[in-house]
Length: 295
Length: 270
Image 1 (cartoon, one colour):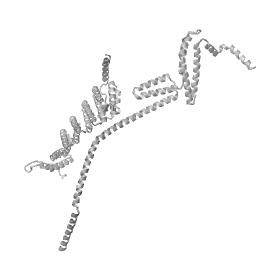
Image 2: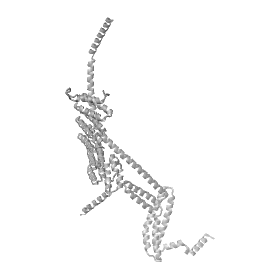
Image 3: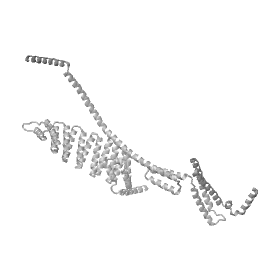
Image 4: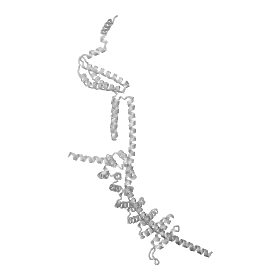
């Protein structure tokens, strides 16, 4: 049966499901079986368009048979084929549908996995949609209380933001990662996330933001006593002194080399722009303080 | 000629040529009112003694005796340096019978005396340089800016106390090389430890992440196992029922009857 022509199978299955005078109720069971076989046949024959269609119909059939798990699985296969065809709108659509079906089965983990797969497929073509998918996936996991699985998703989303050069958003995401890490007591990841956020702010040449971020993070005990804290303070003091050599030296240190690859690349490119501008700012700030002390 | 005659004759000749006797003149000078010249003479003789002792210490084989002699020399030097200010004051005082040039010359004499005293080798300069280098080195390793302190103190040593024996020089160089190598090795170790620490932390988090998953798996497998057990029991019951001895005997009897009928039919038809 599986060796017969897939298109014949499809037409047969279609006939089974189409309601007409002779047929008063669609026979989804056998139709679904035929659809699945047809889809596999098309996939082997590398006829992606038809295979995608067949998977869609198979998924619909499974839904009718009220087995959302199989339906979701078929949806995912359809989405993977859509990715091959570079039909991005359909990719988004299918992965979202698959994720909803997984949620119906009460399985949030495969749901977020489906969204993550969609996001990864879209990273190059539609980065904004990719970020949306990543965010949704993270939300699903956080609702379920499984923040630890979300770390990888946060990191991937951050790298997409950095590629888009949206540094404030990237830093915000890193802080969210830090928050998630805090909830599950993953101190090392938390400190690394904060250090990465500070580096992203410095790369955007925004010393004020970076310092504010550093002050905020210093409120947290776990960060205060960590290696990453010392590295961050060294980096910020090198910036305020305008010492380019020191900045380069700190960027080579081991605390930074343990971070994500994307962040390491940013750190090696520091300092961006004119560091001596910060030095004069710092000097100007000190004078008004002195006058206040005298009075 | 008897000995007494010889001695008398020598005395007579010495008296005749007394004015050519420098040492006596010096003593005569010293025993005069000139306090400066007296003190100067004393200091000079002590310097000579100290120099002789230092030469003996340099050639001394036993370390303990050498150290003791060096200590003695150092004490003498310290005492002489204390007396120098007194000498200086005396040098400025005017003494009758002395020309003005000689007065100024006395000041210079005092200064040169100071240099001569300090130049006496006492085996402590090499050690001082080493200890200075070591303490400077410790300061350097604690912070990056400390390296500057170390180099300045070294320069001071080399300009003022340029008294290095070849041995101390070599020793110092070897010490520096070894210290550098140790620093390099320690840096490599530190980097490796940092990497290890990071990896260990990551492993810790990963295991924490997988713990609840393992718990879930455990639970699910337990449920599946109990399901299987109950199914097995039911299956055993069913099969037993099917293969109960009563049914089995009835099956065999019926089989024999059928075989009997078949044999009878076979016989009849043959």
